[in-house]
Length: 399
Image (cartoon, rainbow, N blue to C red):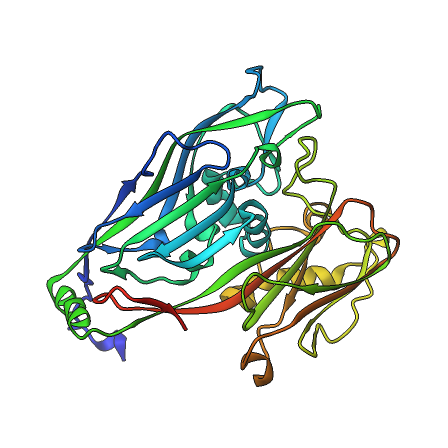
């Protein structure tokens, strides 16, 4: 028994001797305006980096196009993600992971992923899910990149001997990141500094020799992760029954989680809050992967009479299914109804017929009354991806 082993030696792990953050700036530090491409490169090949712990540092101020006071303007929850319409991570020129509509994608994913204690830490990145709005005209934030891309969240290994790039494309305006009472307000968010903060890892001599042998053997290293893709249905027809054949930008394989959300007349409206969603009188919803239906039973929802317990349970079960953690949802049922009445459908357990090839995704739902005009539906798909890279030849390919 361990309690009798009085001569047991303490275990000291010296495999990592140092881990320090290095800041990387864009090629052109002056091009941080609307629609600009911000490209931050990590060129060193003789270092070990840990991208999963890297973060995006932003510094700037909130103003208006005419230079007036910003006392009437407030930043919404996760506002700084809405400053970018696309983010990409590239390895040796090959796109490993990318997300479009960064603000909405990371907001939806965050509502499902984080609990209250994690949200306290993420306030440093502008994450205030219950406060919803932030005041002040100056800001500096550190956004963990695992909030924005599935690669950074899932792949928890160092990268060997590869050129890496982070590419961000600014949005065409800042209306979705800010909220105000007066619809004539024209907000402008100036980014003064932007850094990619990447950990450099120094290892002990035995570990250094082992990693060098991997390079010498010319073997490919697997990079598995779950990618996030947000698909938009811009304007729903004003009926009570809807069918949506979801078209993705790439061939859809092995989707594990589907999240469906609705917003009415919010996009590019400074008086709206893009971090909040509506239920639109949803009464039932189902997803079809080829011919397989998820969930199997009807939901019988009625938000007007507070009958949404089943939908809340589906929302709360995400952390256990996705991370294998305890179900600690960020919202109470009341907060869920008012802030993010979204539908999470767990399709992580699938038959081999679905896993063996391309998947056709279709969503069907009913509402208690006609959907309001200018209502947009969003479908967030979390699906498996697998890459291989050879640190000696620098070849990167998708499996």
